[in-house]
Image (cartoon, rainbow, N blue to C red; front, side):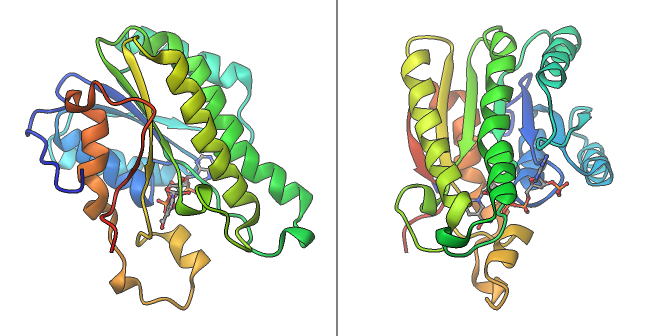
Amino acid sequence: MHTYKAAENALTDKVILITGAGDGIGRVAALTYAKHGATIILLGKTTSKLEAVYDEIIAIDGPKPAIVPMDLKGATKQNYRDLAATIEQQFGKLDGLLNNAGMLGSLGPLEHFCVSTFENIMKVNVTAQAMLTKYLFPVLRKSDSASIVFTSSGVGRQGREFWGAYAISKFAVEGMMQTWACEVAKTNIRINCINPGATRTAMRASAYPGEDKNKLATPTDLMPTYLYLMSDDSQDVNGQSLDAQAKK
Ligand code: NDP
């Protein structure tokens, strides 16, 4: 799917919620989806970053987005219920959910992991995504064809030393996607994962501070796969974990 070319209007009339939409891959996905006609619900931790993306979407004449400031670390059942009710009221349906927000935490031997960091990573990378998906499920059911995308990682498919809670959380994401996918087969909803691969963002820089970032793919390079899974061209794709970058 690395070479997929979406029609300019591929996402017209779709409403797509993106978590972690203020920075990195989520920000570029928001701009890309808006460019292809989608109305974007920008969810993230830092309001000023979401406002900047909002302005960028307006500047490219994209459909007017919505902003949802939410720290997934502290979000409650009621927050998710309220969000679902607001989406239902304002848009009547949800066509896409990109579970993209993620937290790296600190890397190091599992023997020495910090319990509170471990719990926070699980909350942001796993529990919050499970809850968001659960509570938004009824509005996703109202779409003609809805796509849920989880964000995985290479360290969530094959164990690697020192990636700690982050790696464990990404294995959980792959498992969550597969379990959901079995349950939604033959419905209007499909659920898949994307593994972005090494990408030039703040998270990657904190994992590899000494690396030459100019050698990395940019979030824009990943967008063919992100567009494919949100467009109706992937209507029959369910339960897959796709790589956003071609293997080198
Ligand atoms: P960034 O750190 O650049 O962006 C992460 C985004 O998630 C930010 O918008 C951030 O918001 C948001 N976020 C983090 N914590 C929370 C929280 N508690 N509540 C709400 N929002 C939160 O990361 P990337 O763009 O690189 O990563 C995007 C996804 O891709 C992640 O799931 C990551 O694990 C995955 N990934 C990335 C790879 C890479 O090489 N970059 C490789 C493999 C997977 P704010 O800016 O406000 O803090």
